[in-house]
Image 1: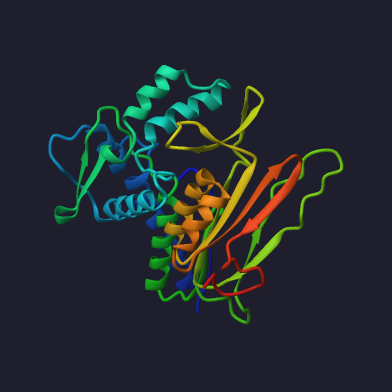
Image 2 (image 1 turned 90 degrees about the vertical axis):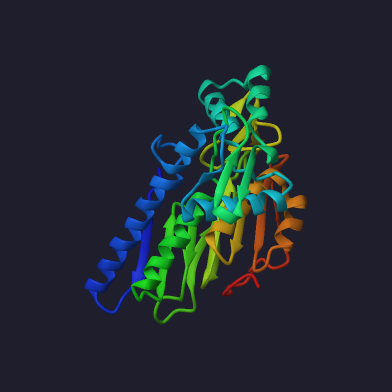
Length: 311
């Protein structure tokens, strides 16, 4: 999926561990062929290429589950997360490469293919309707989290009870390693900027049976016309989210953590906090830069002290 994956597990024997590892990575490879928007032969890409669909298109169980959850997150965040954002994502990638904002005409045309009315799910047959030409579904803000969860499921079926799956920061953990209280996960703040500025120390979470994801512009930012933008696109404007900023979400599963971290980056701390508060077993921490100073805030369930979950 374009990033390094790490699976750490504890098994009764080396043979059991190796078999579980192979099965976990095989599951990730299988899901990449379904969910990737970079692979033109993936199920997702072939579905997008069919837009507008003359008839409802049946999809696989995995693609259905991801799209259904994506629509739930879209509705809960008032469109701050949107699986139809693909045309805007493509345009913003071009802007990041060129260092120039998208032309207004191209931006308006891309926005015509994005939004709530462009995608309809038909639960009875697990079918999908795409209503606009030039649509392009993009599950980049949720698909990796889903793959992490499915890899964990595969490990469980192989009898692995203590494991961590890490997709370059999209992380899910199960029971703690032997002799410990949980998995120790680092949550770093934004780097310090400005003369004499010092970043806060790295924070650690102690988690079991939970997931954590961080979204922000620490590694994929671009400056255009003197303004810093993230790679994360606001579906409502078609532009990258203004930075610098980062949000870390802890949730019961990585699918939810991944999608809500993306949505929270778009919404900003105040609006995102309300969404996080309404999501069971979920908490978030927000970091942003204002006048050269790091600003931190967090939702009430944030595990400030080592804990097992954000309950």
